[in-house]
Amino acid sequence: MKYLPMNDELYAYLSRHRSDADDCLLTELRAETEALGSESRMQISSEQGGLLAILVAVTGAKSIVEVGTFTGYSSLCMARALPADGRLLCLDQSEEWTFIARKYWRKAGVAEKIELMIGPAVESLKRLEDTPRFDFAFIDADKREYDAYYEGILPRMKRNSLIAFDNMLWGGSVLDSETNDPDTAAIRALNEKLRYDLRVECVLLPVADGMQLCRVR
Image (cartoon, rainbow, N blue to C red):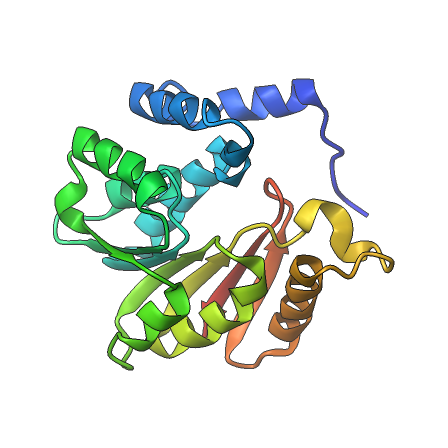
């Protein structure tokens, strides 16, 4: 078994050694989000933001869909990595949290690349044309709806595009047979589904709370 146990000191080292570690705007956004209190747990980790940006850039993605925008950290990282003619569609239910996101999109000069749709993501996806249009997708919203998001997004993904899911280890509870709350059960079921789904090729990575990456065949 080849893996490295993480502790606070090693994680701090990991966090420092990335290209955007000294990015003032990202630091400001993280601080404003953390000031919200317990809600800040919904913000992705800093290294996840860096990873998403690299994935967008290296795949040459020009069209992205994000389910679950919150205060905008992931969308900001991805939008910056898009080319000048790239577009990002963000789906979220909260005007309050995305108000913060919009502020930082403007500060970063990427607001014109981003379209925000407010409302239940499953319904928003149904309103989109049922044709492949996206090169990249990031899903990080209601865990019980993950499978519905996946099925709603998959027909709209181009061949060889990527779909990334956050929180797919769910604090390790996916292994706890006595934990069967709706969120855990949904994540556990989707991990099993993706493993055998011939429509995609997937790998589950121990990044933050677990990131599942799926290549659309």
